[in-house]
Length: 226
Image 1 (tube, rainbow, N blue to C red):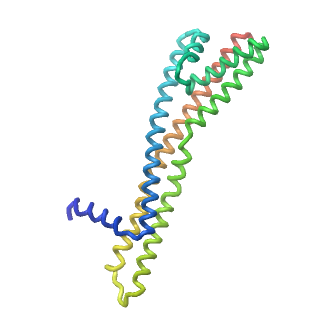
Image 2 (image 1 turned 60 degrees about the vertical axis):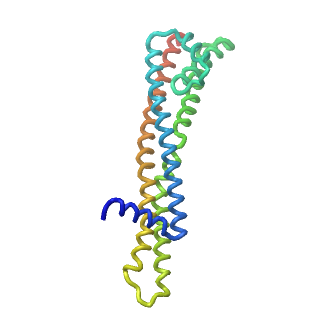
Image 3 (image 1 turned 90 degrees about the vertical axis):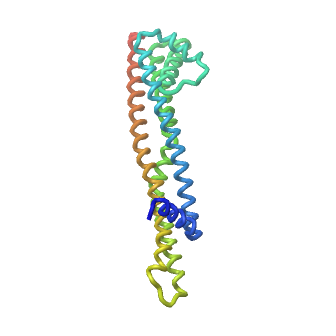
């Protein structure tokens, strides 16, 4: 049997499956498409944030004047993200508190809190979509198995009116039902793989952001003489 016939048979099994199994397959296809959309968007976002973090660190540690760096970020039409947002939040709060209260120690403490809040918001933004991938990865095999069970039940129920049952009569229905399990795995495996990959990337960015926050706080302490 050539590949064209096999492909036709696979499509035929899907088209001739029972209505409940088709519904399960449709749900799994939608889940798979949605997960691939999230994967594509998250891949682009994390890669962009990694590049931005490297570029910002190079600029920050190049000896640039902090006030000038803050001014360039504030004047940028694009909203800062990642490390730039953490720096902007901390330095903005440092200048504001220092101007209002004139207390260097309080200014540094407030800047540290502002950077912590900005860091947490950035990580929350980067983690969006990951729970969906985790959900698809965990429940898709069970949804596929549910479709298989329903398909097998329908196949055996059809034999109730037959006096002599053979494997040839049951096999097509079981084959159709088993496709639901295969589709469940097809939806789950990429979701699990990329969930683990993206979770690792987010954790690395968190460590990078947190390290920068601590280093910047130390710089502010040194500048204020505390």
